[in-house]
Length: 238
Image: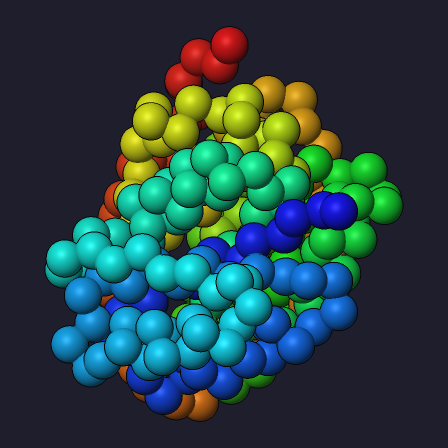
């Protein structure tokens, strides 16, 4: 029986967390959820822990002190997933910007269609984003275009945070050597997998801006990604 783990990093997501967990656990296929909470002062972790007894051992939580970055949360989750023998590991936001039903399509891309890494893509079929300000759409779209140009990687949504990894990808990448910790982390993981010869497949999705809670996006992440991509271009891969 395949083991599938959905990693959801959280910081102040009390408005969304219970509903997103219940929705994922209700899907066909036996998905499990690992929440990694960075000391949310709004009680997000307490809500998660209250749901664990009724989850059938399919809900897990790791708590950290303070905001330590998106990339470090996922790296912690990846290592936890490998230690607990999961076959497929997913990244997903807590705020319903990613449709949980699309987890089934990402899984199919890897389990049935031969991909090693499946990307829920906003840009492989035009622009599929709902309720984002036009300035943010333009910034995100051209950020991915910049990455494709510099790195030569044929992925249209390089900054996507809705992803399915097969176990062998996470076992092969040296996770302790991943440099970028903000949203540049998403670029670095995809590029590393691609350079190591893994098959990357984009699955078109519709991305919807959050309706509850506040965005954690900050300007500093773009600087890290801009310079980090140039550094990636010259990195040696073995």
